[in-house]
View 1 (spheres, one colour):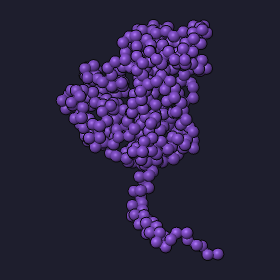
View 2: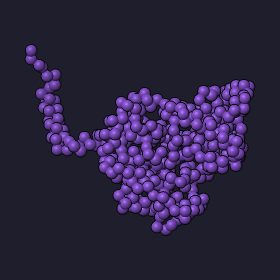
View 3: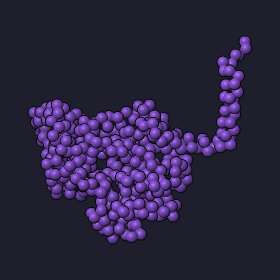
View 4: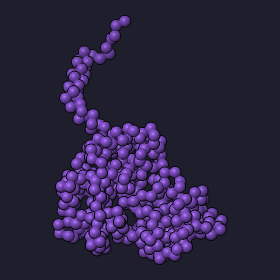
Length: 403
């Protein structure tokens, strides 16, 4: 039988010419196209696992991830630098004077090195992994010097053969003006404490939680620092059980790990069951945003009442409001709002498409849903990086080692 083409002769010739041009372009630039596509997909997958702290990937994805992320990844690891005691003291002084980030408390943590601007009035907190100089937040210093300090840090990284990247900076426009790439990685939940106290906490959900758990004998208490050894023993027992749950581990870089000395100096909000045993806790760390409070470790024993953490946060937010705080930072919801708008960059749309089709990421939606019950405002959070698309997989792998 004959095949009858359904296209008109003119349309057929135009389509044939278009495919001929595409084929010629692919033949000439094929490797570039292929590598670009591989980097996009590899970067998307690797960023998922970097922010979730679950790298290597599940068995079906592990090998492709390693292959894809290896594009542009030719050197094994950078040289971690150790800040001198004098540098650490200077960084603390500058943070006290100029700090304005929610993550300021972690910008002077022991895992950070410091780059000081030529004037000495600003510093960048960073860590070098896989030849990536990964900085936390914006440079700390006078606002008028932020751009110059960021540019000097990028130049310093290039001079050392590193790729500069900034995780969750606030002044994103500044980095675009410096010619750096900007990628949205999620949204952060910030609760207005006055609104929560006056409205949200009085809603049916939270009144039910307080009545139900309070009636059953659960109690939430605030423990001001310094913490006694007996309480730290209880807190550590809860933390050990929490770390024993699937996919739970210690993080770092932009949040804390369990450290008795650190916890002893922070306020702790704890939940006790009717028998008096501590079953959950959240500790408060300083935020350098004006009027903001921030939690760090949020841990519980397996099998506690499903509304237990809700009660801890409710009592914590109400207490902080009474202490004069205006907002509470509930933390990042990775990939929330990424790639949802029509003008989103291609990589963000890929991330959105992948996340919407892989059931393994369903927990991300539940995380945002959980935080939404506190009626927060959602603020965009970004990763800013130098050297363009081809550096992204290596940057994301550096994040998996750092976070």
